[in-house]
Image (cartoon, rainbow, N blue to C red; front, side):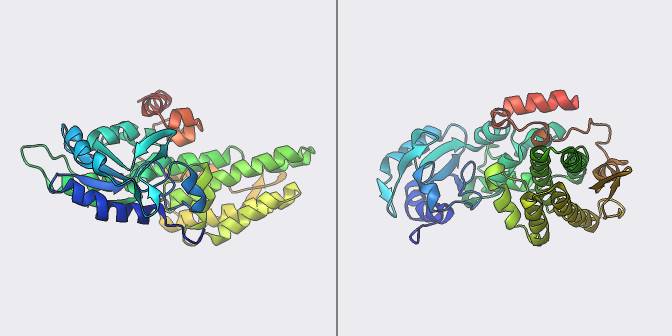
Length: 349
């Protein structure tokens, strides 16, 4: 484990020492972006057994893919810093350099090219994980962003990343509102399940709500929540999140519904205070209260949702949210045509 080189560092050196000299004067952009734990800087020594190695995506102008591939890929060394430069990636042997036209790559990953402008459907059909994969990682060289003349250039990779860095305010308000609604819809269930002796149901609902609070916390801090494997890791890296994380840990470790409720209540109050701090709405009471006359504590997530949507540009949309709030299906989230079709149908776009 002590000799592990983070994939981002390895790939940066691979580009500088090997790929850039082979590319020479060829107009290109180069980066480590897209799928992979190393793109989000979550890789460890455990990661090296599959889908991991020195790798660089090289983006070239349309029609130049074959030339660039022939110039670079056959001349790659067999290994770099002790790691093979051809390795299994998604169960297929792949060279450490993959050449692509940037617009085609973006459309394949997202379903659209953000350099050409984005509408509501584009934003809401793009999974958070995919948005993170484009905006995280590192661009080693962005020659396409320098303009290629003859009307070829549409902006480079950094232009695409800048366009996707974070939601426009109207979209952000809508997504936050829908995330608060997800909490509101299940808030009292932890106590209600426990009250009738369904301790397993109470624990399951606690875990569901903890997940929604974590995603809300990241969205409030302008972070795209990653997929399940890295959600806790992303939360741990969020500045000022220790109290929320500890409250959720208390809730998840609770042996009774009251212990679980106490942990969730503390987390709700903390993220409610964050909501007030970003000032997208007038300040709202950030303390839990009783659910009607029952002994169940809730934050009243619907209050925050209504305030965020009040008078907003997207208030007329169904409050179902972005694709991640519509479905957990990996088969949908990782297939842009399906994600776009589902989002369009749900929102009536």
